[in-house]
Image (cartoon, rainbow, N blue to C red):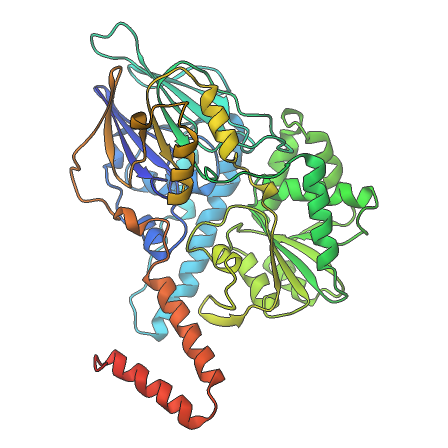
Length: 529
């Protein structure tokens, strides 16, 4: 008997974590950090819905923090098994997880200073650099297509998912007691699109019993996404953003997307389709990750282009805090690529605080923006935002260029599943917001029987057999109800209310009108109306 529990990326796109239970023990596929609304991010601080000490292993699909970011916490709470990953994923985790710990420690320190002023108790970071060091010792690299054994009776191997350097789909075979063959499963993890600059098309086997498939862009049909189309659109965005004393800010994931943008911007300048514009990569993580990419350049489809781009005299990496702060004093039009891609943490927030209120600035969003993130709020047209407790009017141009996304769109996901046929039993759709999940489910009509398509909620479980799947009765209440994932929460509503109050007071005709607004608000707070 095999059971799977969906402890993350169920009904939403972050916190990927699937726990498999067998007669010989349990293991995870991924252990990622939750992003988005504060309600979801608070899950990072809560206990896991399982005992980490009872896990035999983790199989890690790739290094992105929403898939790997809670591994140090897992170790902190007693996990001592092996973490299986591709060699490139292990290398990238060696720079991404220390960076994650550093950001947490810095941001918790800043928050605790604010909390002290409000007489609130201090918080502790989810994990520290010491936890990361212990975690990295557990990594066991495994090349693509080589079988390894997470625990007795289970074997697994990685297939290139085409999403980022080292990314993998995970094929799993589990011995069925008394069965004449093993149960064959496939976890897609994040799948890359066609025409990815640095990665090949996804690869995976066919003829499976059950498939767990991502759905991030399940409801989206992208236009022509060829490299030339992508570069032409990027060129047009840069030219439209140009202003004598302005800046183009590109929030970007430090791994893969930053390297793609560096390559394309350098190539456009070399072709004289763009003038020579200073490009600053304001992310120590991106700098270190780029070094990893350079070491693996021979394994990348566009590795030569990336290597040439890194030699550009117009490309600069900021390492220290002082170098980052100096960007506020740069004169003339320039481009800043900074993490994080959803504007949730890191140096992009400091760059936004300096530029978001200026007409001469442009913010170009180049990847998926999860519900509740600052990037999504900007994309949805907010006239004002709060960043680290401060209020800012949004005067900068907000633009989006989705062709740099690392995820396959709806037709590509449906085609990927079609190529996995025959799938004897069930397809579980995960890693998507509700509309995307429903969109991909609709696309599968004619590929997979509707009754075999399952959309699990957070902490749902299922028993998997050669004859099908049976959803399990919950052993405990889910940490979040289905309608609490991939949604704006009360924290977002409260922040918006504060912005609306300030806007109403600013628009009031005189002191008397402002007094009326404040009196009505106070009555509401006191429950009088």
